[in-house]
Amino acid sequence: MRKTLKGIVLIEALTFLFLFAVVSFTFLEVYITGSRMIIESKNRLGATALANQKMEIIRSIEYDSIGTKRWNGTAWVYGIPAGDILEDEAVSVNASQYNIHTFVQYVDDSFDGVLSGSPNDTVPNDYKRVRLTVSWGSGGDDQSIAVFANFSPNGVETSAGGGVFSINIIDATGSGVSGATVHIENSSTGVDVTTSTDSTGNIMLPGTPAGTQSYELTVSKGGYYGAITYAPSASFSPVDAHASVVADVLNQVTMVIDQDASMNVESEDPFGTAVSDVAFTISGGRVLGSDLTVSPATSVYGFSQTTTTDGSGEESFSDQSYGMYTVSGVTKAGYTFYKITPDGTTVDGFDVSPGVDKNISLVMLDDAVNSLWVKVTNQSDSTPIQGATVHLVESVSGYDVTLTTDVFGYVYFPESLPALVAGSYDLEVSATGFQSDSSTIGIGGGLVEEAVALNPS
Image 1 (cartoon, helix red, strand yellow):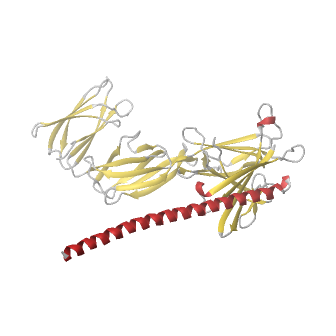
Image 2: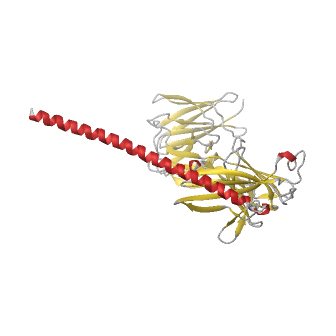
Image 3: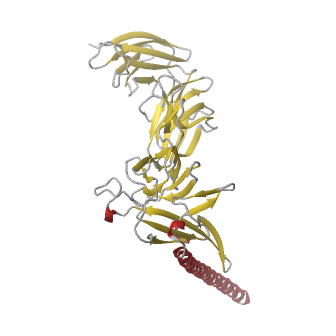
């Protein structure tokens, strides 16, 4: 009985310790969460007070001085409009560290018309809008606050010179991209400002100093493949050239960005077995412009890399642009490159959509395997014939298989292992609208490639 009682006491003690641990852990979690919420509330209140204080200081500044500036390490650079307010400040309040970002822009209010509109407002800088963003911690949406205020000039508005610079950021479908960060720099006018697109993907900057192809733009957004402008030259014609601003007119620039994409490349044989260490070059994605040093001019792409699949026949590329990609220089000793699957628009090309993980395979043919690769084309123009019937017969072994050509006019025998037996094979190729073709193929000693050109009937 004493042993039984001791066992019961031990079980009760362990149960008590378990329940105590659960209660203590729950209490600790509640305490930590509550403390974190109190700290975040304190930081938010502090940021709000700091933003209001900063806005009151700006209210005391002369209207002409309301604009931003920033020291880039060697000289002062300015926003649009230029002024005496620091673009970024670091402030410590009650042991909390805050960052204050100030953005000022002219507003062309539609009340009295807009520039180049109806009615035409010849003085588009109606007033200034100030946006203060105060952030702490990581500075994400949950750790920042923003306040806005409009400032009107004393008396009648006067022209600030320059032109209206309208920047539109859209995605591949033509929809505006909101919240995209745009950095605008022009060393000749001292402009160096960073701001974000509105809900329509637009940034409107009246009063931008005039300049000819001197405004460099850099566009970015989390999860998106960004874009930059380039200077035109005798050898390179960019899609996105440095922007120009002409005084007293509306100057519009449109740039396209979209969600990042990833590509997963596998190298394998036609039977699905991985083929390791296949070397290849992949290029494509965003088109930056045209290379004018060759004739005809060729496209210049934002991505090009030469690499090799690993021991498992795999290679991946993350955070890339949508668009068309091609592979070239696909090599491995003892193998011949066949095509990319799933079938794309070309044997060596494939298309990647925004925000997707694209999986493709480089199909490699083993040169040592007794097999037949048939390529069927149109005799008149050398284009591939899809849907052609290819019949292969070997009477001794009883091999009798019919396959249909793919979009590239290709078929490969055998469909599955084992390999073809050595021997003499009868090959017949036919397609609707074409004359049939018959031939005898000797197979033995590895891969055989056979090109068949059909004459239109």
